[in-house]
Image (spheres, rainbow, N blue to C red):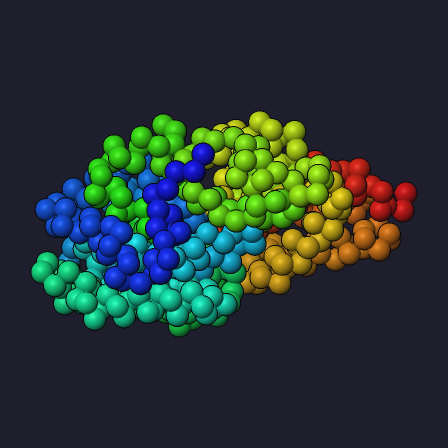
Length: 416
């Protein structure tokens, strides 16, 4: 089941060091990169079907094409390494084990979009990983891989800066991330009516997830066909899937899209711990609609299949829940996080998360009635599609799906 593209060097000792990275294929795509035009690189990425791996799954190449024609304004690549979604811990694997792959991907991407400065935004709690990425960038500068020239021979200037976030979950949303990067409070921006690039200090910018950028060198070196031979027609390639909870082998495993979720759980995840029965899985980080054990049996790990079954692939971070875990406790645990992390800009989100948190506490205390359950679903409906970003709709998805799929567990707490 395992297919290693991004994670190919993860198990090699000292793979984060430049000397070892060079011995194991890092920066091997650069010579071919500079035989291509920027438009040809973008076209190849578009042809590969590479999709964003930070949760949304939007096609990567068409996103690059939104950059306006080159003019006197500086252009930027912003790499989203905020990774604050509970249950998601894949990007930090790249930071830890192969930061030079990320730098190689940044070189390829910046060349394609004609950007000469890249920012890597990493969540503030990732101190160890920030230090490791900074050390790799230092090695790259000292060996003239980046700087005034690429690999000390290609006339393309590139600087890379790591920006440490302040620990706000909302800064994983790309426009809030840019606000934070500009030195402002991390509030999401209103979205434009039409498709366009992002704007960093009113200059054009592209925002991509860490794993997305780390997938680019393989496409440059081996062509689109080297990537599309994995996965499915609409979800080509591979992804770093994470699994946590009461399983025998929690961790991060790279495999191609299109595998069955139950096989991933039983084979790579090693099955349920201590012989417990599976109750449910939250499939792609804590904001994705929950799947019952019977739905997990049918679920396939690609974007279209997950949408068809009523959930989303998200970041591929699977949270496993066993038979002994109360779904009311799960809902309360999740809403406490989202209540705390709501940026407060939009009233339905700011008040809705707090209201649901209060009602779930009331349910757990045995003071709630059936009307309170109905109120939670009404609040979820009010939160859906009525805010600037998708934070509130994501809260609605996970909370309402837990209540609708496990109603009896909630009713045992009700007074009536």
